[in-house]
Amino acid sequence: MRDEIKARIAQINAGTAPAGYKKTKVGIVPEEWDNELFSNIFSEQVRHTNDFTVYPLYSLTIEDGVVPKSERYERSHLVKKEDVFKVVSPDDFVYNPMNVRFGAVARYKGSFPVSVSGYYDVFSVNDGYSKEYMESFLLSSPMILYYNKVATGSLIEKQRVHFSQFLRFNLPVPPLPEQQKIAEILTAQDAVIALMQKQIELLQKQKKAFLQKMFPKKGCNVPEIRFAGFTDDWEQRKFGSLYQKSSEKNNGSIGIDKNITVATMQFKPDVKVTTEEYLKTYYTFNIGDIAFEGHHSKEFMFGRFVANDIGNGIVSHIFAVFRPYVNYDLKYWKYAIHNEGIMRPILSRCTKASTMMHDLVTNDFLNESILVPSIEEQRKIGAFLDNLDSLITLHQRKLEIEQQKKKALMQLLLTGKVRVKT
Image 1 (tube, one colour):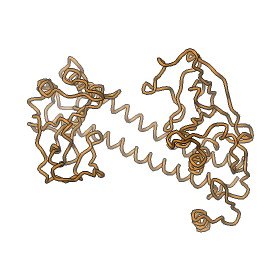
Image 2: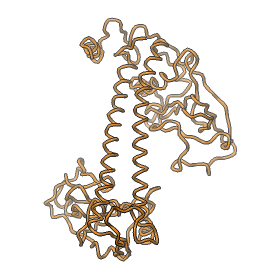
Image 3: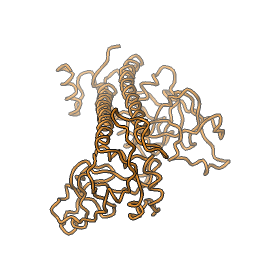
Image 4: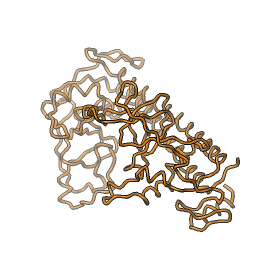
């Protein structure tokens, strides 16, 4: 980046308008960016329907935009005959008055019309303006700040920007050629991000396939895929011959910084209670131990086990902790006890529902059986799956870098801090 551009950015960040720039409601922008009334840029689209066969029901999410209604948000059983939904055509925008200040506005990129809740507002971009530019512009940092500034409502959590108010916005917009060039740059970066996301999805599908084929199916003693040199049947073992229930209390020697979050298998950095007596109510959770995390979800209906592969620590006494009797490969075992195909039928028999969680019946679990390969085969399987996970993590980190690049580009281009040649 040239020194003159760096100096300009520093000047704008300090709140001073450089030569050729002006102060506006949404910050300092180039002088040739004219104020435009949003009612001239956007047109409301109001077509009602209750026909989900012709117009599938979609939802607006802050994370993914306009997407098919997921099971998580499924409310079709609550839909009444008089409920009215709105039709969304390809390239229309969907807007949530209450959550727009958090980024709930998106362009629908599908190829066929769909329907959304009548609570949402639907609008299109008029000729003479770039819909691709507006897609990024409406989600830019200055716009998010502006939505929050003008939102109305007595309760902060229920404040909203009504669509009628949105159409009255009068804010600076670059000329069409500059809109198009900015959109071209951001779209190119989106393509890089989309490609990386597809690569990650492919790797995750491959991992799922291997998890299914590298462990025996029901009624089989060996898996479908094996490494060369392994032909023996896997051994049927009771969990009670592999693990013992551990209720070892922390003696205070392990500090609060070693408190482990079971759901994510990370050390907690922000626990406020640090008294020694409190710490002694925690169980020790050593590397190689497993703990039952009873929250049920779409994937883990009866809860799940997680293996401690991050180091010695402590966990809340609400978790059932088990310590291994035998030598096993930890990399292998964390996939085995986290494998829904293996553990789901076992946990369905030895857990009981308790509000939003499942409680484990320890004796029932220890009497359940699982097929176990030799330690040598465990090491092969564990190393293979761990390497695949590392590859996925590497791609995810690269994706995060490209997503940060997109944010930086938006911050520079959509504010006019960096200009583009047209």
